[in-house]
Amino acid sequence: MLLKKTVGVTPQQYCVADDIDCAEWLRVHYSGARHALGADMFAKLDEYVDNSDGKLNGKIRYANATTEHYLYVQGRSRVK
Image 1 (tube, rainbow, N blue to C red):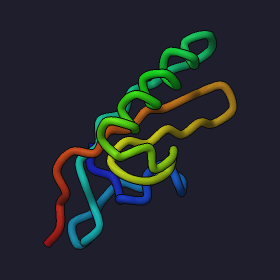
Image 2 (image 1 turned 45 degrees about the vertical axis):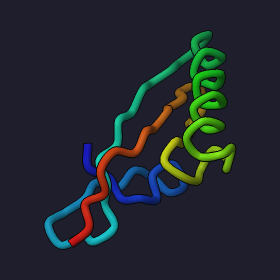
Image 3 (image 1 turned 45 degrees about the horizontal axis):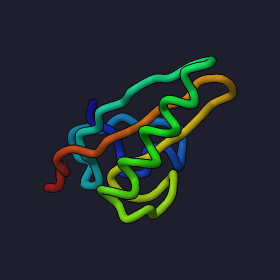
């Protein structure tokens, strides 16, 4: 999906034709007891890819809304 680069920080915002701050993102959804699996995967990827820069920074992000948890992996930037 094409999302603004603030994914995880602000409510999900899809890109439109004239946006200059977009990227392709892969989103993996974890809920309930699977939260621990997602958190572990995030920790490993964040250390390997982003040098452990935190849940809402870099190319690997982890966000949650109540019992729903999302791992985001940034792909190609879409900058005009």
